[in-house]
Length: 383
Ligand code: GLA
Image (cartoon, rainbow, N blue to C red; front, side, top):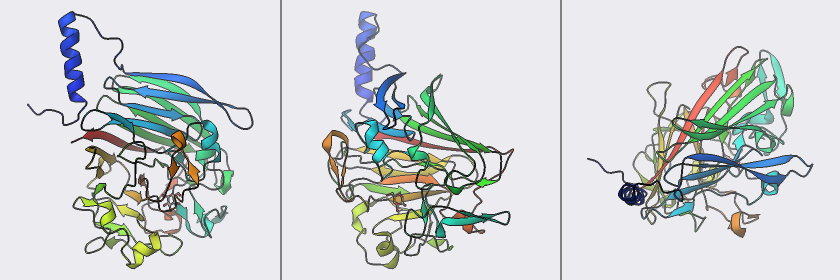
């Protein structure tokens, strides 16, 4: 028999032994459930809630309907000790004023659109330039600033929360009323599942993701340079100085962007080659090795001190690996922790940045009658 590698296995074995011995079910132990708490108000007085999703092993994820943000993820280390592996804020107000997208949903278009405009069916759509000359993460008031409607879910394979948001025709310059749904589910396999759906009444472009900043040391206890990354990708998208893909799919071979073998994040991060300098470290889109449309492994991050492992599987064709290069010590996050450069990494599953202006990239156009549907799973274990 192959034993689960996670440290969480032993406490549950002991618990089962004790409960079997005494013939009762321990009430104090974690139970798969979702609980809603009130989490204050927005500056203009709208109610914000917090949803606590827990599985039987004590793996716990907190989600707020403000920005559909993942607020915390409590994951076990190799001793079974739980710690929070994402950056975030202690209150809804933090998410309202946030500029770094900590844990939030991203839409209508994740990552950049070059020149902050695109044309669709012969019409030019102009977007706000909120990142130099480009549009970033849906614009000035993207999905990260929306107050989503929320509904608790209790299913056989997990508990969750379904968040919905109607992005009106013309919002942030995008055409079509886009009805978007993000469903976060916690399973007993210590997974956080993210399922995205969207429909539109006019042709539009869509690229939804989540912008969680992870640190597998837990509680942002240091930088992430000692983490080890594997990416299931042979190619990346080289960028220009505005971080817009130049259109080429380039081999990672012989470059600091080769993570086809697990490699320490900090080993080559200060390399002076062109792409590393342009990115200010890692801030690129990797094209995933895929054989079909279904779920496949995208990335595996391992933190040697704690043993924590995070595996990312997705239906998406690409992943943005970003090393918190813009965290500059101006954000005070949870428990007063100041978030500094390289204190976290993001692994944002996505379609390619600037696809609306790059006909050779997989399309991000959504038409009326079609349903946008993608899934990404972050699975936590320890070894
Ligand atoms: C993404 C981008 C980065 C940066 C962050 C937000 O990951 O690729 O360049 O803009 O979002 O700070």
